[in-house]
Length: 257
Image (cartoon, rainbow, N blue to C red; front, top):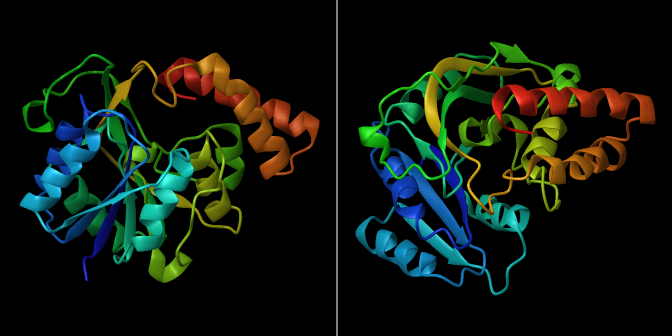
């Protein structure tokens, strides 16, 4: 069985999918499986996924019969996961080649089942490969650790860097929300007292502001954050307002919300 299961949802990602998959194939840590779930793409994303699977048996594709959204696509992949560690990478983001090597080594001694890393940001129109990436000064630095109370004020875990351990947490699915499902999962995990810890080194590349991406419209995400705080987390109106203000500040500071 592989040590790491990498979860990648795909929906009409033909222009970025190849670079994202190749960044996983190039990992120096090779004991992984890449679970790609195509969520009803109408471009040639599915054909690209099949080609990668034909070339490398570690790539395990699945196609949803109808488009159900990112949470359902991710959860379909998580249910098929065989690895102890579950890691996440969207089809428009990339990993640097030592990402898994560094994070798996850290997770083995970090005394927490939830780890994450710092990451770089590039523009939405960036068309490079992870292997050719030249480090820039647009770094979202991960705090050394973060607990549930701090996470309510600010989502500090970039989904493209997150990894959790199933031997401690079991198989944890993302709440079925249209947006912010990754944030909701981290809160679910941490609500019971888990403190997430990070590798401070930037090990991934986040493509910011790509048209149509889940986080491209920050203003439109505000009601989704509010619903998360009020309905999913059960926060009072004052606590939810404080958390929303923290999320807005995080968006201004990092370009994410």
